[in-house]
Image (cartoon, rainbow, N blue to C red):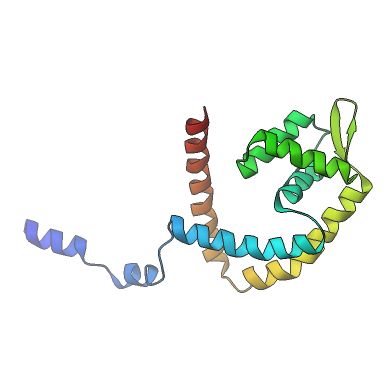
Length: 165
């Protein structure tokens, strides 16, 4: 086989390759559009409960923690999710404390019964919406998307750490 034959074979897509790329390719814009579409839906549900997106993230972090956290540990955990300014996260924690959804307990911060109940209500309210959005997507597609999103998150986290170091 000549060099020109090899290059024409390698540049020609097979039916399997063509089938795998018939949809739009994932990129930063597609990821952003999907994120904001889903977040827009979530924000409507949260607003019905008088909660903001950062409050929900902080409350979930506090409720799902395996052990009580200090305020700074909770700020660090939320920052890992939101990439927000620590001062803004502290303000969010103060809002949750003012609403008696979180409480300081010595050196730690913990969710109150009202905080746990609110998170449960938010989870129940978003479950049917999430089911409609995610339902019917083949498991293989979800697995592939999960791998790609995990890699993108890992790389973006590394870039964020380098930029904010």
